[in-house]
Length: 90
Image (tube, rainbow, N blue to C red; front, side, top):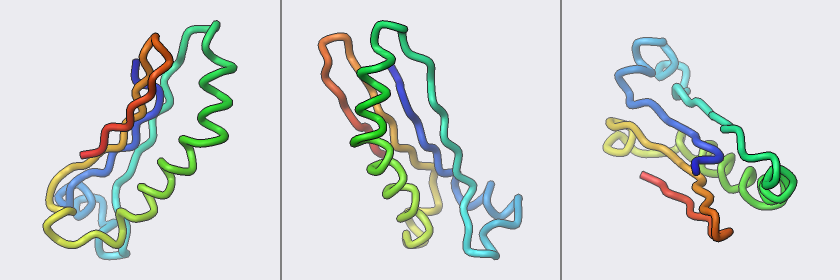
């Protein structure tokens, strides 16, 4: 189950929105709902661990080189029922 997703648009979208010329990126964050029985556990983990990691990744997007910014990228926190977490970055 996807819990948190950050998505960084490629240069084309950032240029269209005139963000690139100001040193910015078109970046979005999506927080998905989770089952009630997991909300306290996942909420605590987000607060204590995952949000900082996600925001660090997001802050580094403005310093990436031209090859990286030419395509879209994402940071995704995936939670499975066995309690395992996976961060998928591309």
